[in-house]
Amino acid sequence: MRHLLLPVIALSLASMGQIARITRASMIDVSGQDYIEANRAFGVPEHVRVFKYTLRPSFVPPLTILGLQFSALIGNAFVVELIFAWPGMAAYGIRAILQKDLNAVMGVVMVSGVFFVIVNLVIDILVGFVDPRVRIRGRR
Image 1 (tube, rainbow, N blue to C red):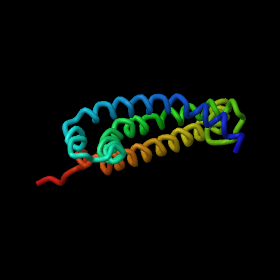
Image 2: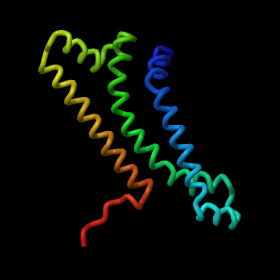
Image 3: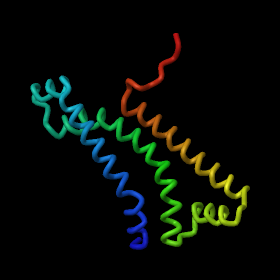
Image 4: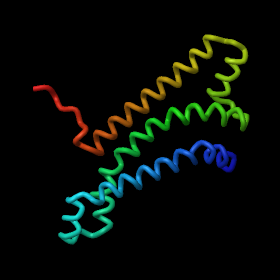
């Protein structure tokens, strides 16, 4: 586990800062809404108000950014696997590029692309669960 510490820090530190900043800005924006003030006036406890009524609607922008950050994580995995000499898909892709193996390069790009599309699909579905206003309605 201790061998994972530096690569995890290298991959996640920049993303964590951006997600924290966007979450904070979104929380500040949502906390100024009228229904939050009404909850405060009705005496709803602060922990319920923060976690149930403020955090859930303010989690939509960070969730969307998290899906986009996944592409940066895929790209940074190439660098991290090269620096830490880990065998993986990124190291295989680098070897394929250096050996000019076009089929292997296309395979790595296709697998990375499929992962990116699947993660963004999951993020879109999660946004629909978190914010019901985003859900697709059937045509009438």
